[in-house]
View 1 (cartoon, chains in turn blue, green, red, orange):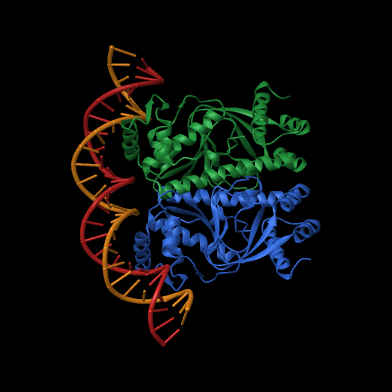
View 2: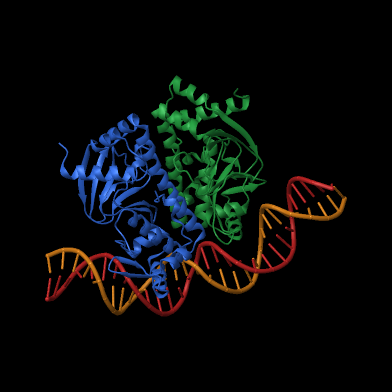
Length: 244
Length: 244
DNA sequence: TAGAAATCCCAACATATGTGTGGTTAGGAT
DNA sequence: ATCCTAACCACACATATGTTGGGATTTCTA
């Protein structure tokens, strides 16, 4: 019944949950038996749309995803970036109507898990419920950090902070090392995430290169001066809860 | 054992939780029996500080509270405002270390409830756990709205949006009506919440009065043109999940 | 491999917002 | 009543960021 891909996806989920708290054999089995429907998405393809009432939450298995809100006059605010292992719409378990949209940034593999099944698991295993709850709380901590950045940091500082954050998230799941990682985001998207125009985004990036903080070529970010970047970003990774 | 004040506080909590989902008699009793320690705070007195590891979460019984983050050079970002019935640090149930501070804005009455007791209740009653989880998810939805505002709206639009949001929250708990409410916030604090300087905050407020959208006198906000304010704010209250 | 379409980059100018400073008002304490 | 302080308000000027427009690369696709 369970395909090879869905087995792999649920394995990923188990590992992700275990990064946070210990799972009993029974809990591990319950997660492993969740019904997961695998799907492959094209770059920029939407997963869930604002105002919809999804019946599933998704686990990002491979590729990047992003959350965004559309406002009037074609304005778009990107709210977060997501990497494999994330469950970016877990919140729809308890808030029926989406208040934003979710899309794939790159080609991506997604596992859909029915709310019904997830709710059942959380009812039977309060420990699992707590771990998933915690995941959504970490998302909220990242939102708080973004608010503080948008309110108190200039474009340069915000960009630096975002790069630090993304690198740390990727390193934690083994997708980055040596202060180097892929960055499958256009400058326009970067701007929509930071509240900057694409022109200013480009200015800031040029300046960051000129200061030898980063190199950026063909979708690859190389942080050449990590300590310097951390300093201008005032970056403290503890809010990401990555340390175990 | 339970004081009169703590009974009243837990009654408030029960009513708040019931605004979201139905509680069984047993659940209602469990909440009513939570050990709550009542405390009265002076205006601007801190409740929990950044980096601390609280053992309690608090229920705001009376008065206003606010969440904030301090950054270098005396910069402060206010992350949210809270009104009676809110549990602004419920997240510390599953994230040990605070990533921001929490303080009373006005003179306030607070009920502290030990994490131990809250966790026990959530383990025994998955339904209650779900409702509390949902509370934290609504907070996150508000954060998203703030991010979108800071990234895509100018000072005027952000201010308008905040006024709409606060009025709706107050109206929902019976503390406001007729588009009129108290606003125990200085212009400096308003600016720290919106990412504006106090000078610009004042400019925006003047302009808002000049356009006959609001009146503002002695800590009282009177929204004289609700529809107009909603329009410039592009305000849609659904993210607050107030409708029942 | 060629053409088309994104994306990146840069310059000039416009505007929202910040900073510094100082004056005015209102409330609380003595 | 008077003083003291916090809050409010206003002006001038500085700066970060937005906008427009166009050219140069890169990437995609046929």
